[in-house]
Every structure is written in structure tokens, then in C-alpha cells.
Image 1 (cartoon, rainbow, N blue to C red):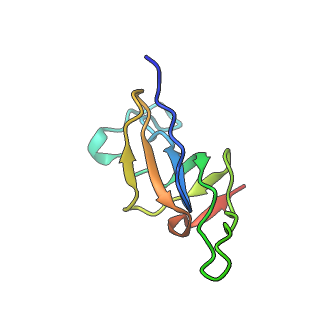
Image 2: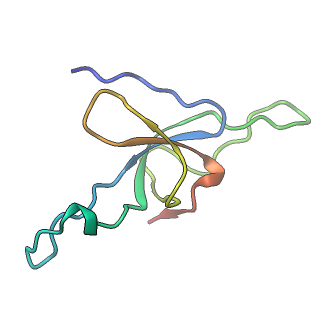
Length: 100
């Protein structure tokens, strides 16, 4: 199945959330209700940036595609691109930090 091509607008960022841990290091299976929400993700695509109010030029974003980021627990818009992965659209200002 082909996935759709999605290009975020302005200061929005498309993020793929990391998968939740389903097993511990010792091999114990964690039930779904006990799994914590994943707060990390990888940036898939970024918009051109918000426009400056005085000059009208785009203000570049501080993140780029491929960066690992820390996400808020709630927020973002869930996006279905036709595959089994979980994608969300966030504003750049909603992203908490880059993870290196």
C-alpha cells in the first residue's frame, strides 16, 4: 500500500512516535494497560517556518527531519498515512526538546 505524501505548513512538524516497550530487559511481557505513553519521536517532515509579522519572511525552524525529539504527553493532531505507524502533527513551539 502506498503512503500519502504529507508536507506540513508554516511551523508545523510531522513526528513519528517511538514504539512503546512491550517487554522488559528480562523478557517479561508488559500488558497494554501498564505500558507508559511514549514521549519520544522522530521528525519525518518540517514546514518552511512561521512568517515574520514585520517582513513577511519565513522564520527557520530549530529542528529538521531526522531529529529525535521529546514530545508533550498530550497534544498534536493524529495523522493516518495508510501504514501501521503512528504519526502526529505538532507546532514547533509544542516540542519540548531535541534528544541527542
